[in-house]
Image (cartoon, rainbow, N blue to C red; front, side, top):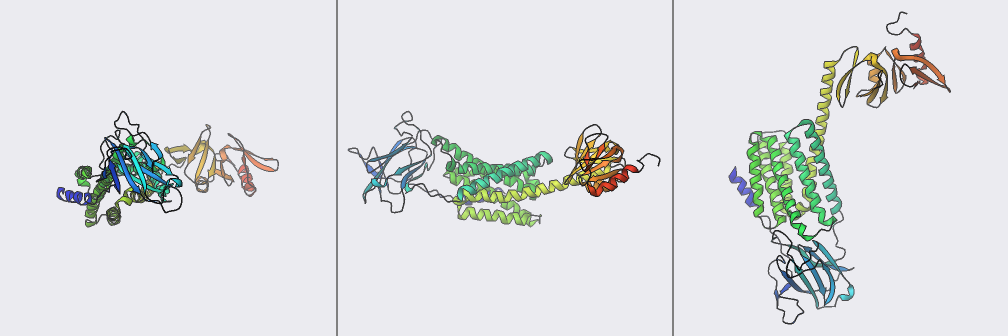
Length: 473
């Protein structure tokens, strides 16, 4: 088992090939406009971590419509110039931590059209990063000129927020089910949904809020940790379904396997690798369930293979969006199945209790609090409301009972009479019938009067004239 887990780790880790952001930049040993400044082509990523960095680039004049801006995305303070004209500052870069004022992770410097020359534009960027925390292999996600505002896909944010909301709602639902049933599967599914939902929130945080760049490393660590947690919990849940005897070993193996993603360069790649490793191990265990013909194993394996295929072909799209949508599509149907199953179990349990406790002189009341035996003589009236009824008792209490008024009218006759489509009264507590302002009402020994419908007036009069239970005719 350990051998093929290592092979899966090597396969998924090899898919991660992080990109660099060094397109056409020169790195200088000081301000490029200063006398004696030496500049040379930048090799490798733009990396201002632990130093002050000056960059220069020959920038072509944009040809597209609308205004443009210089976008700086990464763990750095920054300032920029175009053709010697000041564009703006994000924080305050400096030669040391004491001199630097940390900026935000994403900055945009709008560029006026009048600053552009027909050709020969020079873009200068000054960077420093002394507050980033752990060192990143690729600290700058973008240093580029693009249309302003940046054209994000229209459906990206709604899809992310919808997936996050659905996943967090599923986590709450499975949490409630766990409190009721105390099953390990519901707890694992609650953890999976919660991890994926929080991951979606953090993944979209940079599109919603602006945060200081020193926080970025902790956001990346949290994203990786949530992805790793999802993978481990997925393996735990799948193992509980298809290979229960290997539960602890599979979970421990998943934790060790997912931990190898820390050796993959780049946090996006680490996240993709941790998800891929968990998915691959879960797929292998599910394949064993298919071999042993476990119910539901084939459909789940097809789903896991689809997710792994998307991760392999489009890792960036998967990590940024597809993962959350697919995770929601996995846990939400499972939540619906669990809710339906819980409802059926509750109905069967209440029906069994009602049958066991039923007596001819008492009404077995089922409610959210359990089962209560109510003597028929203590019920004054029963008021209907769809699939529930309200019992009014002689001591002034009211109880909500999961039953229909039509059913109770049939079961409790002849001691009760229907006076209205939504009211059934105990003949023992019926005192008189009166006409008030053209409408008939019955008065009871306790509580206020109840209306009498015209269609039931004759029945009520006959019930009043007939001998009461226990009386001699």
